Image (cartoon, rainbow, N blue to C red; front, side):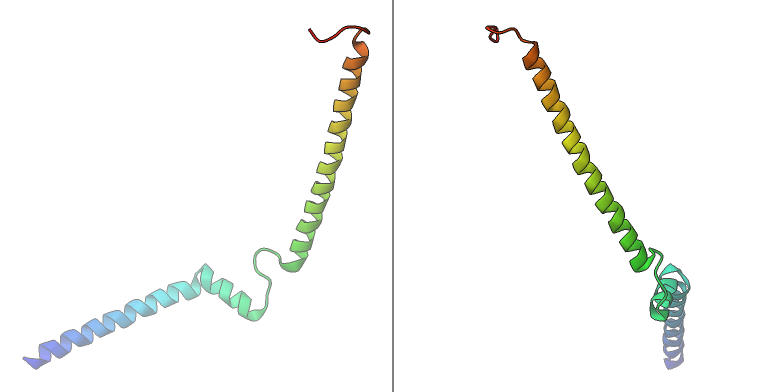
Length: 96
């Protein structure tokens, strides 16, 4: 009566060990495992590292400067339009 219980526990333990080994193997050989291996070896990650970050920062600074320039041009154009409207009115005319 004791042998079937021991056999069942042995089978369950082996199945658990195989399942855990399979999951760990899948993670280790998958993208997570490869990323961890690159990180441990000191290789840059897929995003490019510091050089890529500096390049992206320079692009962002360029876009901010361009946006500021476009805002100045828009304000200038609005002032010119307002001056043109005010110059087109005849003296003595009010808003009706």
